[in-house]
Length: 177
Image (tube, helix red, strand yellow):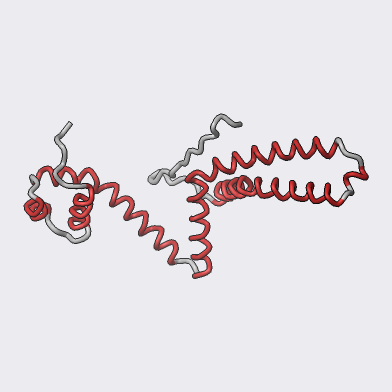
């Protein structure tokens, strides 16, 4: 393991930015920061490929967005935000909410089966049933939206490009099937 860097993570980011974006030489940056040129070159090399890959993805995404009409750009941004939320953990919430909805549904069915038709038509009972239906519907919405997006993506996705393998997201089921 090498020794601790004399530059902070923020300073390293500044060095990388100045080199890649500003075009400053590694030699001049190494002199300015008092770092061995070989160390700076090694650090930049270790991070450069990820930054360039991300930069190329941003270019491609920007071109794809700019090719759309404004209204479609807005829709694409909204859909991307929604997908990011789902991929960043909302899927687990949707699964949990589905479990809650299932439990509420079972309890509601049990209750409905145990009451008479006259009790069912009672105003207070009807309010309770409606409230339960609203809760179940709201609990199922994230799951439904997630599954709809996943199905639409499978339907719309082009065949895989062998030169550019697709990104795969793993969403754990936390032991639930």
